[in-house]
Length: 252
Image (cartoon, rainbow, N blue to C red; front, side, top):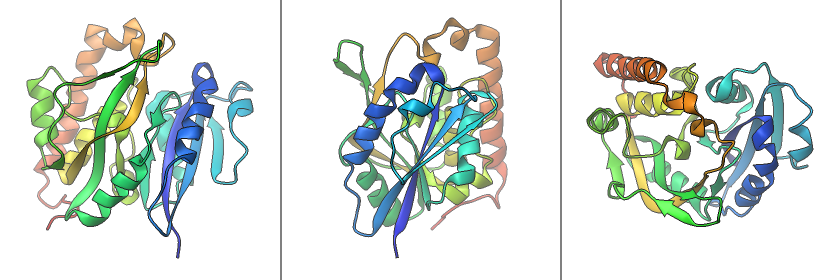
């Protein structure tokens, strides 16, 4: 019986031309025996600008919907995700060779681990890369560790939510990505860590493209009042989940 991992990509028109690079990185993945991938692409909107950039591949499911930003778009994509696990891949990013295989290895062999992350390199417009110099050591991330680090480091987690791979049932139980104008992936990361153990892979798993049209490069992303509100609701959700003694996933 074939096992499936669903790769979820939210895309809006300005980033659609990067889908070819993301697809190439996905096709270069080598999966464990018995595993295949499904690519679920969901447009944030209903335009004619994205469809021409969607590769012709039966493993791809493409959908459109009313604009709602990345969190809503990814959550809508969950309706077509058929895999046991869901992996995030933003339209303008690229997986490194072996990324999916490393995710699946951790999820299948590490007791109690329900989600994984990995090292990220920023991919700059000139083709150079830049890494984060405070990555944790490879290994398990215990429940609550991400929230503690996030609070102590000006709302910056020690692992990158753009590399998340998680149990699909758990993602569904948590409601998918948060309905926020930004930081929706951080919200899911903290919620996952509130109820389950995770895993960090020290080998680079993602090239995170930096470019002028990137949503996180807009001034509105760091507007003080909105940012404070986002962080407040992200933290509150994680703390409430942590306080539910019956809300534990994969405990051993």
